[in-house]
Image (cartoon, rainbow, N blue to C red; front, side, top):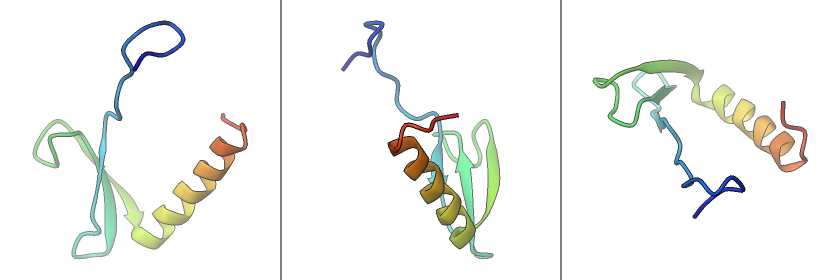
Length: 64
């Protein structure tokens, strides 16, 4: 698939992992935590809430 600039569409440059033993979710490079980078996003419930809010605003065309 291509975008409006006729460039190949790019996939997400991260994976979401978790929750871990502490109940937290991580955003990591596609190779995982041992690869290039990984960022702890926080408790799964709070991350899910924030992602839901962002997705709702994205769907409504309110992109930042």
